[in-house]
Amino acid sequence: MKKTHFVLLTVILLSFSLPAMADELPSYLTPLAGEPCTIECFGRSVDIPARNRDNSFAIAIGGTLFTPSLAGHDILPMAALYWKHRWDDIRIRGIFSGVVNDLDVSKTNSRFQLLGHLDNTTIPFDSAEIVDGSEVKGTSIKWGEANARVGVGLRLPLAPFQIDNDLRVQLYYQAGYLYSRRVAETAPAVVLPPSTLVQGALFRVRYDGMRRNLMELPHKGMAAGLDAELMRRNNWSDANYGGAVYSAAETRDYLKLSGYLTVATGIPFLSEKNRLLTSFYGGVAPYGTLDRFSAFRVGGGPVPSESDDLDRLVFPGAMFSQFPATDYLLGSLEYRRELLPFLYLHLRATHGRLTRTIFTDKQAKTKTGSGEAFTVGVTSGCAWDSEIHVEYTYDTGILRNGKPGGNVTLMWSKSF
Image (tube, rainbow, N blue to C red; front, side, top):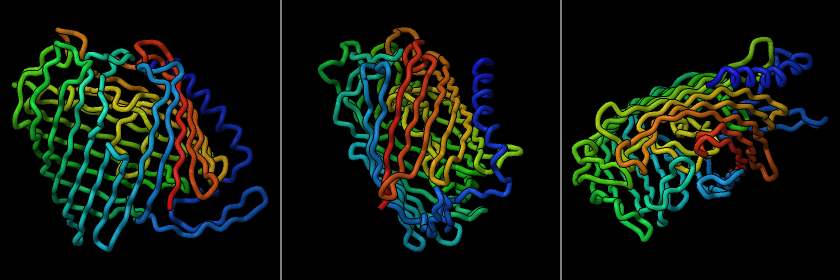
């Protein structure tokens, strides 16, 4: 990130944090997720009962408005159902949106676990890739995948011993079906590989020592993760997705390594109402060439905060899965201010460096670029015991081929 951007961010952070020093007591304690508390607000006292965070069912609805349009789109709608439940030693977690679904199940015996997972991305519409901020109609195809994995793991509870505080080490065997076919707009030069079974091993490590606040936002602590995925396509061939040729020998087998680290801390001399959050995400493929179907996918959406969602790759303001990448590095710095126990303001700077897979050059398969995004947003409790999240992001050009732009994201969620 350019030095001028760091200076600008520092000035903004200080302008919000320094006025708070005069009216805060160092002993103030932020209400934390799941814990009973009493909130004093506008002269009223409200008792918040303890909440079982093991069991939750929620709906989330919202979208992103792009100004100017991005890849020919003015708005990106989002909606999903979220379900998490525990029956003694069995835990289940799922996110369902119809055409994209994700389900995890675990059975725990002491510290050992049996693990299961199902997911699918089976969008019934034509899918075109975005290159330099525009959809390339010639890359339009229909494709999707359905995957399952089974495995074993070790789970060690960690301080502060909430439901999401643990160290998990997991080993899976996974298999899935990958399919693709041409559509009317598919360019004549496009040559698709055959639909096939994809199978291999996945090794994962997850560490979460984070406490969340009343709105389930990271408050203090650290979380980290590591993934190593070794896969093979059973039936494969040379392919061309509109540009260079991807040979079967290069793309049939691949190894992907990725990881993340996020830290939430206080700010010296200020109360808990002021938090500083940093996060880093990185991924690389040391063996094999990643293609359109195997690449890392960096997209938009709300910044992750839940333990099982922290590995999601987000560049604020991007389209869904906008960047297929062979390697990436994302970093962000965020200041959060607690205006009320249920109302939080955040300022965030994000830097991304991506080696993107491109589909318009007959010689080059990738292009490396970088860019920044600056975000201001609010997370608040809302009517009917719901939550609302609104933020505005200004990006410096990585989303629109060097042209700056902005977007507004609105998400509303309700737990039942």
